[in-house]
Amino acid sequence: MVLYVIGLGLGDENDITLRGLNAVKKCQKVFLENYTSILGIDHAKLSEFYGREVVLADRDCVEMGADQILDGAKDGDVAFLVVGDPLCATTHTDLIIRARELEIPVEVVHNASVMGAAASCGLQLYSFGQTVSIPFFTEEWRPDSFYDKIMYNRKGGMHTLCLLDIKVKEPDFEAMARGRIVYLPPRFMTVNQALEQLIEVEERRQEGAYSKDTMCVGMARLGQKDQTIIAGTMDELRTADFGGPLHCLVIAGDVHLMEEEMLKQFSLNKQ
Amino acid sequence: MVLYVIGLGLGDENDITLRGLNAVKKCQKVFLENYTSILGIDHAKLSEFYGREVVLADRDCVEMGADQILDGAKDGDVAFLVVGDPLCATTHTDLIIRARELEIPVEVVHNASVMGAAASCGLQLYSFGQTVSIPFFTEEWRPDSFYDKIMYNRKGGMHTLCLLDIKVKEPDFEAMARGRIVYLPPRFMTVNQALEQLIEVEERRQEGAYSKDTMCVGMARLGQKDQTIIAGTMDELRTADFGGPLHCLVIAGDVHLMEEEMLKQFSLNKQ
Image (cartoon, rainbow over all chains, first blue to last red; front, side, top):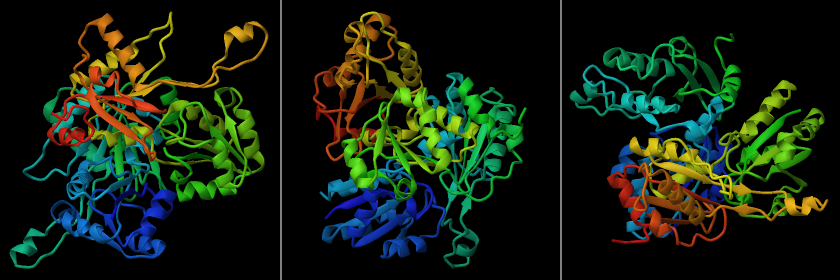
């Protein structure tokens, strides 16, 4: 009779809280949202760890078919698992509002999210401005609304966390045209790809929101055993190797003395 | 031989992650930082829960006497527990830098922090600007550097998270003048006190960073069973009762449609 919306943190099955694990164990049905982020492990590992089936919930299921999830909550408790913290992205707000409309009690179990763990880069979380999303550019669609936000942040001395696009369960239109339902393999934007797009937009706009010499920190697999953090200019990080997903990027604003001290340990260029 | 810096999350002993708990259980010495935040439970409860003594580390101990903590890490593992996430405040950066200088390996275990859980108020975390701290005003000391930051955030449409002052282990100067070392009882700023100070500064500066009609959300004991969230104008929240500590406050920037929908459930004024 309760919908638990549970953050899993960032790494693997061990990053759930005791409160979260206790809740999962009470639930008849367990869903894992798998289109806005990923853990460092396979979801089968989670099923094994919890001793119950974990059903993958893709975007269609959550946004259009929330009923499938909420139906279960009428008879018994349902867990909806989210990588990171459940409230840090707005994706899950709809599900929570729907549940409340149906008078299903909702309990949120918080956890670490990329928006907090980004502090691992050594830049102060207090000094981060608004967060931007960098979408994969296509031939025809190269939106740059993030540019004004980065500019405003930097003019105010603030750092900008850039969340990088994830494409999961993208329809393969070619195959679909031939009458088959086929999905493309998942794609995760790399720090390198994000930087190429950012530099392209600066070259087009030329308003000086940032330049190739702007200090940035690229991060990959935050909170996981093999997390990688590299600091350098946009130009330097363009070719740095961050390994597998997920990646994110921070564009520095004004860097204070202690932040500089912390950044040094991640610097490509040690001078 | 490892210093574990472990986030405890926001509520009680059940908000630690499995990874965090496993680390604590391996440690010979366990410290709890107790001057930047508090859990909803007594620290004796933690000792009992972990089955080992939890030593309280106050500001002096962490900032000046880090050696006491790091000495232990030469012989065996040491856990340094932090309410929330260890990296969200800069307080612990020094300890980590010191440990690295001594070549003691450091492992950070992330957890939920107020900076993520603030999304519980229904305002999008993406749209938060820089965070400000509101210190207790005294007769002679009424600093207002937060004012410019709030102004800049709001001009850019961003929300502002205000962290409210905590005074722990304040010296009682009167008693000290009489040669006794006495500390005052801990003080935690309420949402009401913060609003009084904010309004005072606006009246003095008159630059329109905000007004008595500005939409705000006051939050108390985030992530705890009895968390309280109330939305209303500054004027309305001035007299709202939020109960015990910790409190924090969000000053809204531009409020979008879905945010309005979420805020409604917390509104003092339902129209």
